[in-house]
Length: 368
Image (cartoon, rainbow, N blue to C red; front, top):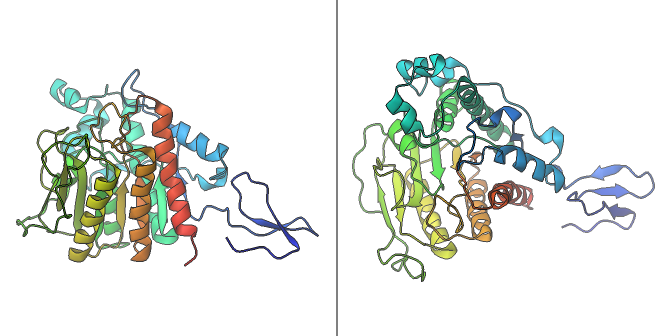
């Protein structure tokens, strides 16, 4: 931090890092102001009853960030729901009609894995609106976070795995339609592969040459499986998709992303970060995005109920820092969504999500 002149005194240690003029008491410079927006609405709450998905986490993240001084109330603009026309940029008219009229088949409701209701559909329309707003804000502020969103298992014609509408895809297609961006890259660090993302942006794919891999077997962790992580890839289209996920986990069928990193069970912080760094480097050698869409799932955490990786809370924050440092170094705007997180203690999930915001604040307020 830059040292204050003698007549300036630091603000109290409440998370604010500004300085005040000791004569007037007015704030003349502030290092504490969050230089980006956190998109949030109370409407993000998913009315799904008792469920492994912690529907209250969005509010808890907002409250924690306010309580610890990371953000102020003005940093949380509220989104409007996406329009039906926005949703139709990604999803089929038949599927949208079923959601609007509550006429999903029993099979479709089973695949969704959350109880359908009109209120739930409204929450997903709102999350998509939040991701559109976050993407727009990222273009002006370099980074923006949608406290909700990241529903990467939704396909054009059906929902899966707690995901009804693919908000990130909707945001990308809306900004492309508006002429705000031409290309985008998704960086999916949820423990589960982004199968909906891969399917939506599949385009016409051709198998690529084997991509460079991290030296070593990547199975040195005592908890890791004997099989090494594998990177496979194919490239096409105007959206480049990267998914870093546990191989032996949902979904069973994993359609090809532009780059898939299939991680063995139990992989820890160091190996994970090495594979992420490699995937980012490989992707950005092949593709120049106008926008990065970072799906920052909390479920690679070692105590997650639906995951089987062994990352620590500190390791997950380093993951976030790596993505943000790459985005800043290349001057690529980055839009963040939070996706999954099912820790035994929901406060751990909240901490991991809050740390993503803190990491962004640290990286994007650091001295050039």
